[in-house]
Image 1 (cartoon, one colour):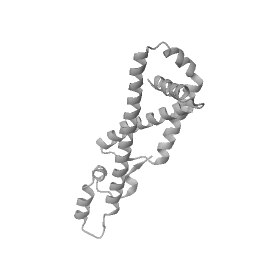
Image 2: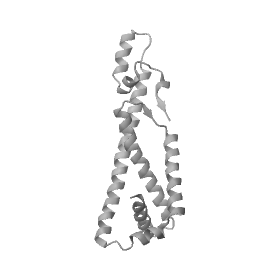
Image 3: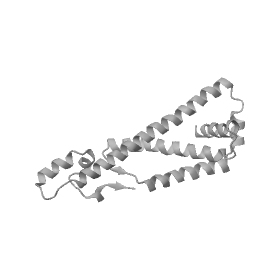
Image 4: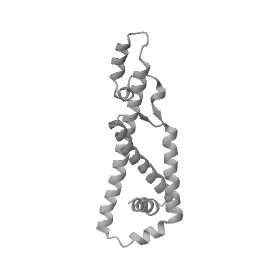
Length: 169
């Protein structure tokens, strides 16, 4: 599947838009889509299991660089555009059009859903940090517990208000 997506992105940039660096565009777009797909799978699972999962920007950049390097090695060393072109050059025009719509749909869904989840994760992280920081230790302990338990992320960690209880990558 990813080989076909790479092939279509590469051919679009090379043939339609006459780009000299079509391979770089194709690897970058494919890597971003893969990263957002990973995000789309991991974050809801962690949220459903009430696991405090706050990946930092650095950790996402490391994963993205990893995807990019793996894709570059695969598509530039192991296989290349010529091999992929030979594989799909006999594709009929109607099938090519239909598969092109699927590639665009896949990329759109990956970007929209992935970025929506990232936005939600960012809001969730800010709300959780604010809830933990707003706990006043001079008040009654039962009142602090009520405040903490209003936040679903704090429920998962118990009544602890220490920031180090949050798992960070």
